[in-house]
Length: 288
Image (cartoon, rainbow, N blue to C red; front, side):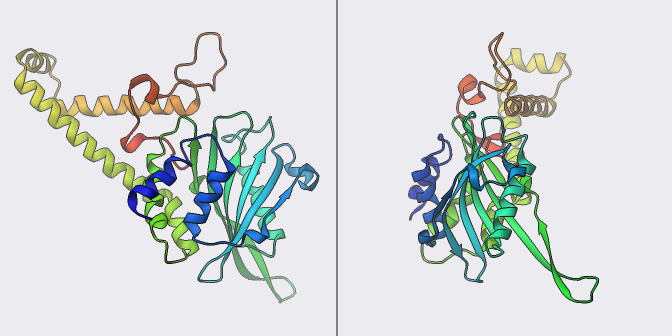
């Protein structure tokens, strides 16, 4: 698919309430092909007691085998009414890890974590690491390591601009000829890459704001005199402005922004609704 089609695929999947059909189509486009004959659904009866406070049911849309013969499950995990995406990250990650170990030692999973009480959902890549170790008897055993889920997730859903997720998956979606390796999927979720992209965009936006302020101060004598009288440089003003905006996004993520008086925290207004379209380095869908 071309760039525009890839952007449309992301836009109809991520900034929306969770939709199984849209998620399935996105997964098909991302992986190019996976074995949907392996689809299955499990209700609460099949959820281990340790995970029942967080997971009500789950389903597998299919299984993917990479060019390196690594295996991946595409999952939807439905949380309980009491569980929360932010608070239950470790528990739901460990649930997926347990699932992968029980299913012939799968290497990884693409997962949609869906909450019945939240507007957002979590799109995650959970990776298992199997290492050979020497056990006491001198025989070789297998030790399992699980990568931290916080490094491989995007918060998506209603009210999220998903600019970051959109930019990270475009290349994979456009490549309809090659089957992606798991390392490529991991790179799309990489916090290091996202952080670098964030700071590059942040620096570019800072330069644009500072240049605009210089131009404005030079053009308008009143504004120019205000900067001079207050002994404030356009550089310092731009830094302060961007810092305050970042803080507002922190409040938004916590669910503390724009909550009407007398209502519970956690039902936030978004900056997109308060002051225009979200874009640039602080558009949500951050890894976390």
